[in-house]
Image 1: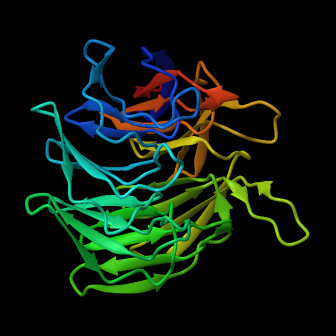
Image 2: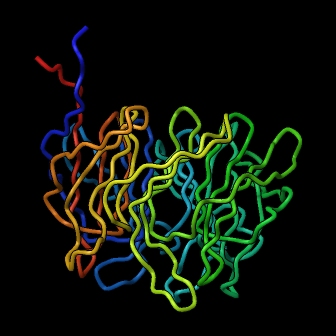
Length: 348
């Protein structure tokens, strides 16, 4: 067979409903839902919008009962579970709401035990699992809680060994991996795993360094990929951008490393086994529009087509081998939305 090359085609700019940042994205049946976020004036919004790729347009749906930004969102069948986040008073929320995508209706559900933002959520056997968070006192939590949609009840599971919020969470088989996060101004290197069968936590090798605004991805082989970011300086040192890419294999317990370009606060995703990074901040004075792809097996970087609009703090999601980068910031909240179509092309 002929060798294959990974090619990024031109970005497709798709319609923008409104400038938005710190919103949440979800994929239900190949349709993109955008939940809440901060509008151009910086206020949390209750907006819910649906992007239909087939007709290339947005639809406004019934708004959430509670305006919020930075909410955790889980997909439970045909329903969107929206948990916590930041409210209009700039404080964490305990409100939990569910949107039925078939009925087009919101329902208020059992609230969290305490207000929380910076939660990380995953789904196992139709139940949502929420990890960590920041409480109303703005301090980190170690809580692990499980939500049963049918019973509308939250149950506490054994807490994490490490207090934190804004973690990266991945569910592999019956284990929940939790990497990094924050404790107020302090970054966390802790890497821990919860075994749902034995209901116990274990510690894994810590992350190589304390980094914020990095890209964190999990591939289909169960590897944690930690890309770039802003490395926290010491007492007499300033923070610096890093170009490190660290890959931890959860099956073998090994750590690999690769490098490319200094950047932080970028969109990151895995598409067809490649890690893609788009936009962000670097040593340049302006926001980046550059896009690159890394193949973990070949340990090779490739430059793809740049985004039409430079930005950082964008939300991103992969739907049907397409990378959608939605909103973000370029001095002010951005209304730019773009889709990267990628394909394998034969080398003649």
